[in-house]
Image 1 (tube, one colour):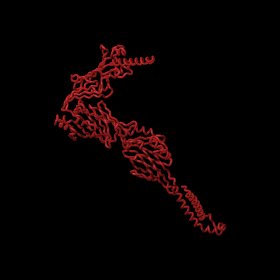
Image 2 (spheres, one colour):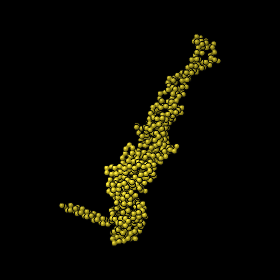
Image 3 (cartoon, one colour):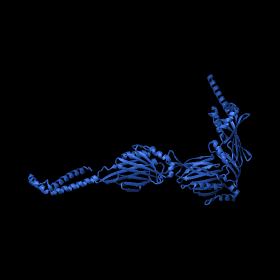
Length: 630
């Protein structure tokens, strides 16, 4: 091995030795947190947590100034804690004491320190099913020292990049319950229970569209436990059946299954009956609905559930489970399920033609939140196409929402409309018969222009070569003497605009021709096809609308020309007949006849004038008719 290689190996070894020494020092300098939780059966007591700041850290961060440390602890300590600092042989002991009067008080104060809802399960029972207590938490005292880490970071920049686990570690933890001291893990879990409890309990809740609920509570126990209790268990469960409820008992695979079924007409009744059946006052069921900011036609339904099965279940016994089953209409899509208090074991969901079902297994009892998404329906859409002239077209699209729909869509829908609007478009909002109405008006100077603007509005963009909403037609190019007409085919595609939303009362389409025209459908298979004067309407639930129509009116110019042609023809013929003797005389005597006959006075002058005018009109109208100038 060369000299250079020896130097490299020596340097690598030196670096490893330094890393080992550094890690060892950090490990030895960690502050150990000792915890004592003292409570009575009513859950009144205190939690005391203490950690010793080593002499080196005390000297480095506070220059060995106890008064400075005490001042920092006093200023930074959360209001729910009593904090103090005192010198001991190995450094300075920081003590935090949390006093509480009840389980809810303890939960609220811990939650304030953690900044979230803590998972705390406490059960003290003395019933025919079990006798004893159980206490379980999903956090440690180390989690409650976050404020002290922040204070150290503010005091000294050397702590800036450190985490809780770099400075603190959990030490000894014990629970003193009604005077009895019990050593436990850092995440507290103590129990002392004698039970004849059920193996599992499942609660199936079906949410109906009308706001009511159908519930089935299943109590499942093994046959051995049932034989130990005998008829006492049957009587205890049967008397829980609410008025109008259903009670059933079945033996399945060496298990006895009790089922209590009932209906509730609203959420308040549901909670009341769940509390009654489960022998508690703690059940929760809350529903909150919010619109989706990214999609005005979608909304979120957040359902929070807490079911307290502690009266019947002994969670100290391995395998004990509480199952929540929530069933909603298949129109809802599952989004997510999360635990609020940290005791959710697992969940799954399923969709079929009738229901969206969410299965949740907890242990102990847990508060869970289920997020569902669903489409917001539009109550009605009205589409109008007004033909004022061949170069003056207007389209109106009116969207109707009932009060609930309008609340969920909020400003999101109006923002969506405005984002799609272009030059020549206006938006009007108002209320009609208790419904919120948004009306978009699109002005255009040709069918092609209207097609482009409509596609751009409905689809958000438009490719002139691939328009999805197309108006074709116009004035009839084939001239008719007696009739003037328009003919249009209107194709409107709302699929991209609506997405998954449904129009509850259907889409009403209206086509209006200029005044004086009579409208008629050429083709179309829509419902309620009605014509009235210059307007035609139809109704459909199909987001793709295709209507062929025409509008006709009398061609006044053409009819006038035809009348003049006939009148001039008749008058020309009549005057010709009345002037036959003069014509014959002129042919026979030539100029001599004109000298002896007075053609330009009296009756002869009148007939001659009529004849000349009639012949002129006849020739003029004949030419216009031949060349179709009408």
